Image 1 (cartoon, protein in one colour):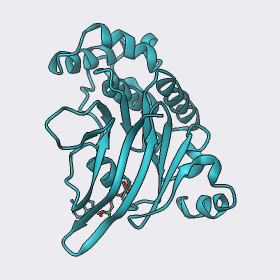
Image 2 (cartoon, helix red, strand yellow):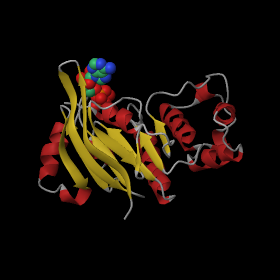
Image 3 (cartoon, protein in one colour):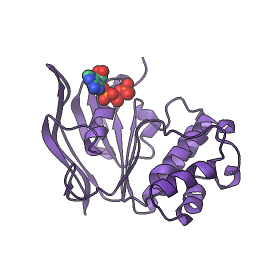
Length: 229
Ligand code: ATP
């Protein structure tokens, strides 16, 4: 099986503080991997290193065999911070602007609106969307370039239960389109039903990395540690 995401000893230090400490994991292509850990565990920093937005202090990452930060553009779409959508424009108009800016095929706008389940609300203004719908529009933006790998940082954070179910369903659909998804949350319970693999971070260190079935006995302990408590 092809490896889509390889993190090899990823480490990030800010001054004398180590915020990500030798984190290694592999994500097979076409699977969903959850990146779970409490606030401040290092999830966003790991994702930023995978995206080439933050340079590792040590270690390296590859996406579909290509080194991150190398010359070739990596085949990745991401939702890592709230996209700058215009409140007064419709979902479709917002996505169309991004498609033009990114020189993506305009047909991708309609296809991604369909994929994220916003086709029927596409002409409504962004400001009328629920948080879950806003997140799904952000995911649509990440899908515009038809990436093989999709990285989503806490897409369900603050979203109501129905919105969470919608996003989880969407993650499953994205993976069934032969894409690889890395998705973070501070709650294991929020992600475990949609993930094939799991990486658990705590204080920058990797506490578990592997197929979700391998968790078993450790699950209770991890659920307790990866809650808002
Ligand atoms: P959250 O769920 O709160 O977003 P997280 O697991 O995504 O948390 P990170 O955002 O990766 O965690 O942050 C990990 C640690 O690194 C935090 O303590 C944060 O304060 C610190 N950190 C992140 N970026 C920087 C920076 N540019 N300079 C200094 N410290 C940073």
